[in-house]
Amino acid sequence: MTTAPPALDALRREIDEIDDAIHDLILRRAEIVREIGRVKTSVASPMLRPAREAQVLRRLARRHRGPVPMGVMVRLWRELITGGSLGLQENVLVAVYGGEDGVGCWDLARDHYGGSVPMRSCRSPGEVVDAVAAGTATVGVLPAPGPGEAAPWWPLLLSDRPNPPRVVVKLPFADRSRSRTAIATAFVVAAMAHEESGEDRTLVALAAKAGADEAGIATALERVELKGSVLAIAPDKENDTQWRLLELAGFVGADDRRLALLAREPGIGRALTIGGYATPLSGS
Image 1 (cartoon, rainbow, N blue to C red):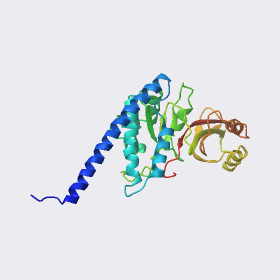
Image 2 (image 1 turned 90 degrees about the vertical axis):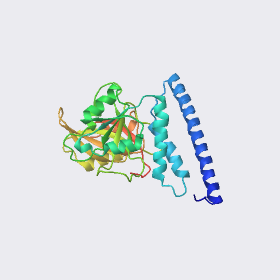
Image 3 (image 1 turned 60 degrees about the vertical axis):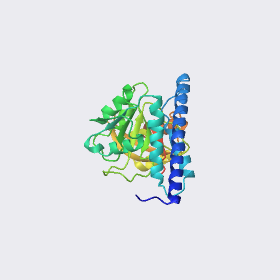
């Protein structure tokens, strides 16, 4: 039997000590998380806090150094944040659209929410949105909207139901190298308003006359001091209008005065926030 050199034994003992310290800190972190859950319950504070999670990961990214890829660190902390934090505060279920045009959403959801959180595949985007609205799913994961979609899902967020689902996260939050499919991004919806993280994008559904000039919409945005672009268009079958999904720079709350001003611009009827998200670490 070959005996390891003394220097190697010393390094292994140091690794064991570090592993024990990490384990102890994770256990202590879990105790604090449980206490946070009790405090949140007493003050009726939401358990799900995507903006806070983004702030934590940004802070860690700023201090990160050494040979370990940042993507690995993000996955480790995502496991702690979801499985080791949110999962200790409430029962979590992720509803994921599993249709042919949603292939890849499962991978993105699993990367973000970790290996211990239950996930359920849904046959349609409507099933995902309904599950979140009914409270049978904590969050839902849907492919990011794009131009030319035959049946876009984002108009489903315009319903008048109480506490309607809103977009709260864009996936992936960090660069992703394990993709098995061509799908690049997805949106997470939850029955809550999006919160400000410090570096954000806001999604607004804009009702404008059918065939409205894109340059005119851009000018209207500039007049009310908003910056953004059109991600997708969907017809409004009940009116002679089209819904345009805008992605705006920065955080824009539902009661922001600029949205009211935008709705008064010529050719525009309504401007409604349907959520937003903390800008991913990759800047996408």
